[in-house]
Each structure stands twice: as C-alpha cells, then as structure tokens.
Length: 123
Image (tube, rainbow, N blue to C red; front, side, top):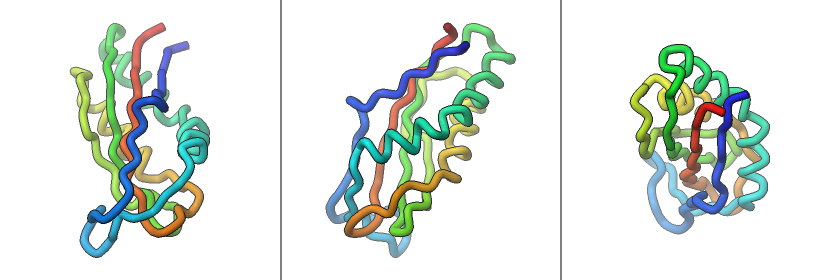
C-alpha cells in the first residue's frame, strides 16, 4: 500500500475578510476535526491520483498542498494547487479535481478558505 500522509499540523484555515472568488467573502469557521474527517473520507480519491502517478514513475513522491474554498453550503466552490514539488503535475491536477467535488459541513459565518498538505511517498 502506498503511503499518504496528511498533515493537520500544517492545515491552514484562513478566516476573516477576504475573497474566495468573485462575490464570495471568506469569513467562515469550521472545526479542523470536521475538515480532517471529510478529507479522510475521500482519501481513496487521493490514493487513485497517486497510484496513477506511480504507474508512470514507480519512485514518484512529493508534497502537494491543495488550496480550496468551502462555500456557505459546505460544497467546495474553488480548488487550486497551492504548491507541489512532485515532478508529475498530473497527480496534483487529479487531486485538485477530486477536492473540487467534496462536501463539508456548512461553515459558520460564511465561506472558508483551507490549505491542506499531502505528503505522498511509495511505501
């Protein structure tokens, strides 16, 4: 089984005034544990992306940080790759697309911006 590490220590939740996308203020809050629970529920989607990369390069590894916005209803309204040191850009793009389909509990107070790191390495 391939190892995927999700770092909650590195989880960055941005609250306060800001813009997630045109017309959507980023002011909400949501417990880190709730975010972690949803990400863990979708970890197989991340694993599929990584396994596809491993088929192209059996030594593929790296750290990918996804930056996404949880909208007022809990659905992800924006998903981006904040950073990646993985040579295979298709892995991070696959992860970005997957994260764009996730649904979280409704944040309190409005939309919420999250940066979530994943460390991917063969294991």
